[in-house]
Structures are given as structure tokens and as C-alpha cells.
Length: 481
Image (cartoon, rainbow, N blue to C red; front, side, top):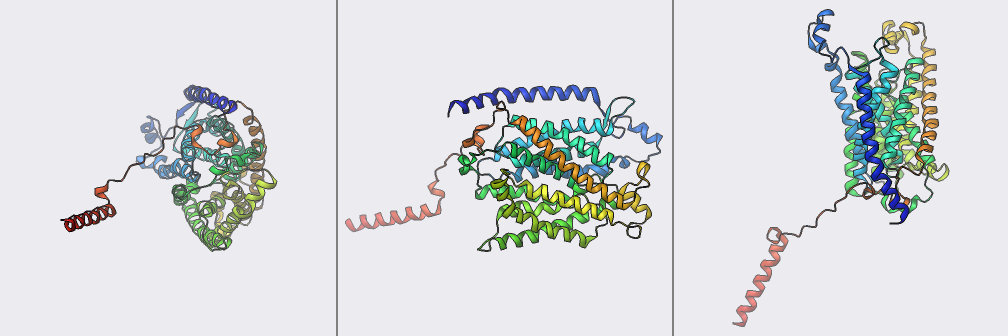
């Protein structure tokens, strides 16, 4: 190991514990100043029930939202973490650093989203409940998507810095899109996936490594690493209906979001398999496509999940997403790396950024085409929240604001990523050398599995050999005698 590599390792040994301790202490102080339980999680809930004539604890929002929160939480820590274990020697980094940045990010997200969305002007406090936890997980999802673009090429300190700025940018663009533009984006096609995708791609472009080929030996997958990655895929695929419906209105909107997402995902699987097979001369399937493109439908239906897109419309979105995402891995990813110098480790452009844009377009068109005959008068008001300052908004205007929201997410992702990437490029973060990328040994204690010799008496083949040898020796001895 050369001097520069040793110096980087020294930096990370000193910097990582300091950053973790300082930021956690800062979280404790900020939570102490700002964060409080909301009325449904506070011990005064008994008084609230009596005041509001609530007869049962089942009316507490916890019982409506917690199942969805649990599903989303599994997606964040298990789904995203294991999806990135496809690299042959970076499973610790995929799951472990995913765990680290998600745990930090959700704390910072509760503060940032609270300051923008739920700060009580009278008390100056942020009141959190189960829906706050779901939104914090959504915020973290954008940063985990960005992590996929730089997987294996950055240090844990860089990831924490990236998450700090990513959550901050997310909270601002979310406020602009959802509050100021009043766009609807229940499953986050725009707010989460488009932003997270272009945020990560922009950072990856700034951190471009011209000599990354020096670690080419570590960039591939092996049989067992692809199997572990499929665990992440299946968890994400199964729970995506919860992701897209978690914060929608109780009743028909949430019910419809689950159905639409469920059908869209199923359709995506079939077209992904078809295109993957057609792309290979042998007709075999590529596990990269199956791990990733099968999820693209869930991303693309995030915005329109609660709209009256119709069951066959959901199947159509999934049909085209499977094709576009798989073709992206075949043609667009090589183009991005060769021409635009974007080294996208996980192919987030094909799974998140591009399907996120498709989702924004689908949402804008579906909103603009909404009609009272399809939704009903009250249905239009409930679905698009045409109340208060927005009670006079038309569906055509809503479609325009939906499209504007998609543009905002792209701008925040690209520009924010370029700025944050420039910060991460400073030579103080302990990032790995080109020849050490995609290798857990740079930041983890990696213990090689012990080689256990076979126990001969339990090995059927050896038993037979020993029996044959004994019989042969007996025959020789018998003949000699």
C-alpha cells in the first residue's frame, strides 16, 4: 500500500468516529429543542379522545398507517440494502453503509421536513407521529437511490455528507412541489425517484474516476452475490404497493393506489423478462435486468398511483416501463459512461431517474385528463385536494403544475448534485484509491471463511473408497497367506 492510500486510511479512522459522534450529539440537542410527540402519540391522547368524542383507540392514526410504515421501513433497510449486494466483494458496504446513512438520514429528515411542513408557529415545535416517520423514510429513500450511483467508490464519511445535503435539498424541493405548486405525488415518482436519481448521477459525474478500470476485477458479481441481491428485489417488489399508498388518503385513494401499483409491477416483470431474453444471442436472461428493471413499474406509477388511471392503464405503464428500463441497461448505461463520463454503479438512471420522469409525465397527463364523469365532483376535490387556496384550480391547470413539479425535481437533483459532488471531491474524506474501489477490506474487517477439512466417516464417497481399499488389502493378504 502506497503512502497516499495509507494517508486516506488514516483520515477515515480519525474522521468517521468524530463525524458520527458529533452529528448524533447534534441530533440529540436539536430533537430536545424542537421535536415533540403529536396529539395522537402523546399521553394526553385520553383527553383528546374525550374532547373530540372519539370512542375507540382504533381511530388513532397509528392503526391506519403503521402497517404501511412497517412495509416501507423494510424496503429502506432490507430492500435497498440487499439490492446493492450484487458486487462480489462489497456486500458489507452495501448493507452496512445503507444502514448507516438511513439511520442518520431519517433523524435529519424529521427535523428538515418538520421545519418546512409542520412547525407550529405558536410553540416553535415540531410535532411528529407515525406519518412523520413514513415521510422521513421517503426522504431517506432519495439518498439511498443516490448512493447506488456511487456504490463502492466513496467513503462512509462522504456518504454521510451526501446524506446531510441530500435530505436538506429533498425537504426544500418537496416543499416547493407539494406545497407551493400543489402537485400530487403520493409515491414520489418526482419528489423521491427523479430527484434521487439525478442527484446521484450528478454527483457521480463530478466524482468521475478516469482510472476506475484499475479495480475492474472487483466490479462484477458472482453467483451468490446475485442471489443475495434478488432478496432485495423481492422485498422491494412485494412491498412497493405499500410505498405508493402509505400517505394517500384513507379509503378509495389508498385502495386504488395499491391495486394500480400491484398490476403495474406484475406487467413490468413480463416485459423485462421478454426484453432481457431477446437481448441475448443465447436467449438466456441477464440477472441485472431481473434485479432492477422488474421494479421500474413501481417507480413510474408513484405519481399517478391514486389517480383513476384504470387497471388496464396501470398494466400499460408497467408494459412500457419494463421495456424502457431494460433497454436502458443494455444501451443507455454504456453511453452514459463512455460519452458523458457518468459511472453509475447500480444503474439508477434506468431504475429510478428515467422511470421517475415517466411517472411525472404519466401523472401530468392523467391529471389533465381527469373529468367529473370519471371521478365525480367530490372525487375530483378529494383526489387532487382542490380545497382552500386551490379550490378554483382546474384539472388542466393541475396537469401543468404536475409537469412543473417534475422539472423542479430534475433541477434540484442535477444542480444540487453538482454542488455536493464538488464538496465531496475535496481530498479530505478518506475515499478509496482507484485500485481499491468496490472492496470491503478498505473500510471493514473482513474475515475469510475457514477451510474445514471433510470428515471422512461422514463422506459417502470416502466410505466406499475405504471399503474398497480394505477389501483389496484383505484379498492381497489372503492370497499371500
